[in-house]
Image 1 (tube, rainbow, N blue to C red):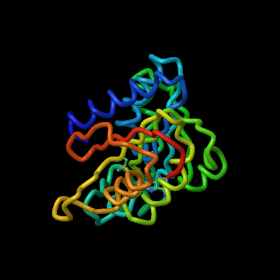
Image 2 (cartoon, protein in one colour):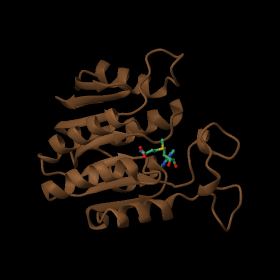
Image 3 (cartoon, rainbow, N blue to C red):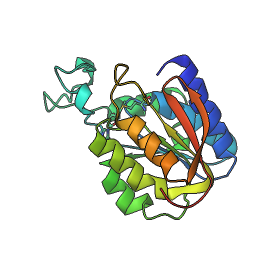
Length: 200
Ligand SMILES: C[S@@+](CC[C@H](N)C(=O)[O-])C[C@H]1O[C@@H](n2cnc3c(N)ncnc32)[C@H](O)[C@@H]1O
């Protein structure tokens, strides 16, 4: 994530943390964006919840565009395991106690912990799988758990297919079309929407 997008995510997290609710991230990876949510949560006396199965997205698998051999599971060659890297990142920053790291597939975690509405989160940051199936499921699973007044932040929104995959853009469009969200910011591919009513 480029610096300006990171700063925009941090600003959204600081604002949303003012609601006093936990902040949610889908897609922890090695913890870089988690640090931004965690610091905002710490300052507001809440926590950041970050969800990832830690086996990597399609484009991060061996041989794919964003593969990183250093993230291989030492006991299962050919599989990734980013969980140890997340833990080290949080520990090095002194932010472990401000983060609840949940290991699992996003829709499964949502069904168990956070789905079905209830307004449990002040911010939902969608940066997990970038296929239509995954990004769409993340939105459908977690948007109901975003409080009115809370912020939905979506990464890698590219209106032009020449710039990148379209799934996050379709999620962003779907959220706006629902009437439950209004646009609250855009910094490069990072888009911020505010929940103004029920629905998704
Ligand atoms: C683009 S990376 C996240 C980057 C991170 N937010 C950052 O800025 O540092 C996407 C992450 O989503 C995770 N992921 C993909 N599909 C998922 C799913 N269905 N459930 C849980 N995690 C998933 C992958 O394991 C990967 O770590």
